[in-house]
Figure 1 (cartoon, rainbow, N blue to C red):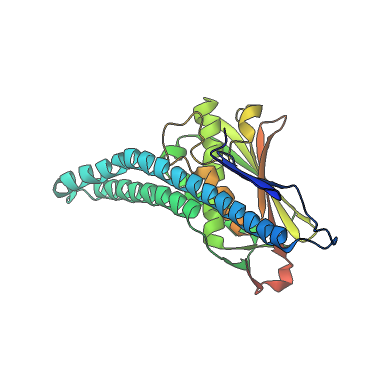
Figure 2: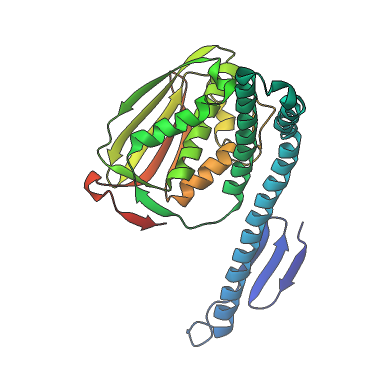
Length: 294
């Protein structure tokens, strides 16, 4: 149903729930030259249509942040409850160095958990230009894995990491953000294997190769495959399956980070499980001081 319709001898314009629509019934004047009024009107309509679409995208982003904030409020209670419990028994632990150290680790883990959830929301919500620097891939991958494996909930599982790194070039990256994005994918892989696949052990593989001016990174796991209808939804905000915690912005924030790098990310099923493919701009190893602003 049209919300607004305007008709004249030159054009038809109407607005409905899908956006602004228009058509021209007369493009040329009797002299054959482009009609100035129609030309100006066309530009106005194009500009307004773009503004409406940008507004719709912004609204969708805000809706995602609002939903994620509600999830964050729910999930943030557990780490704060842990911190509160440690504070309550701190006096009793002061003479027991071992238990005091364990309590310290619990508090640090809780803080990191909260920081991780806040970082997901920030990565998804903000627009920024990144200063990308050529960095070796191997340390970035190891930092991403280390960030995940330090969390107690991942230490009880037997996950084998397999490497097949064949890149000769270095990715152009904002290292802190990329480490966070890759850690998110790796954490999701472990949860897919253990929570959704209900296995205590599994495999994660990391591959890389050079392709023209890009560097391709593959992160795969032998957990359950994606439902075909879910693949196109994986990077949408608040889409989740098999998990009842987190912000719901994990993979949405990953896509945002990769996009800010000028790269692409996709997901698909394989005969062994699932894979995520990331493509990033790269630089030769000799250009280690190369800086690129996205």
